[in-house]
Amino acid sequence: MVITNDISLPPDEELTVQELNLSTSALRAGAFHLGKHCENQNNEFMLCRQELDDPRACISEGKAVTSCALDFFRKVKKTCHEEFLQYATCLDKSSGNMAFGNCRKTQGVLDKCVLDNLGIERPDYGYFTRAKVHSTEREAPPKPIKKEYPDATPGLPEDYPKPPAKYGSRFHWLE
Image 1 (cartoon, rainbow, N blue to C red):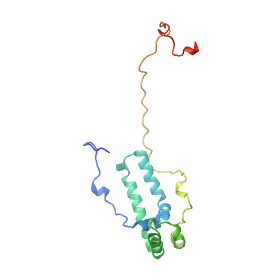
Image 2: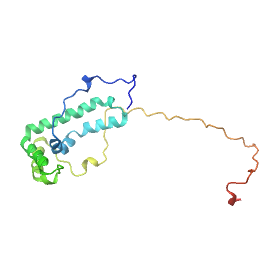
Image 3: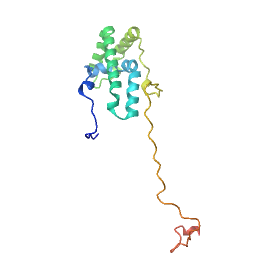
Image 4: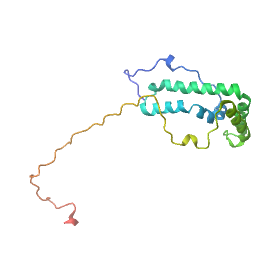
């Protein structure tokens, strides 16, 4: 994106939010439940980004996503800390690519704890790839007006003389 003098950037105070200071294995361990817990905020943010195509217009939605993620991980830490740490450690240590397949037992323990304490059921396989309709309170952006251009050349009048082609027709096999 090229920035010129007429583009206004938001101040640093507006962009500064508390970050999620978690490792990759911790984010991976909580990813499915986090996605389900913060689904509405994520969909609102992605809809804003898709419709407006300007990251500056979606700062408040991005802050809502970060706030929801912080809230989710605080709840997990309060209620399922040991189970979460076991699962994250298993993901980290069991394989080089943090595969889920080696940690199904600890995943089941975490899933049960999150369901019992937070009421969030682990989404089934393919849940996040399904098409869903998201209803929003935000106004839809104005649709761009289609430009109509007049014909570049006006047609010939009906009585204009049309002599035969000088060297014959291009479609000589039709004659």
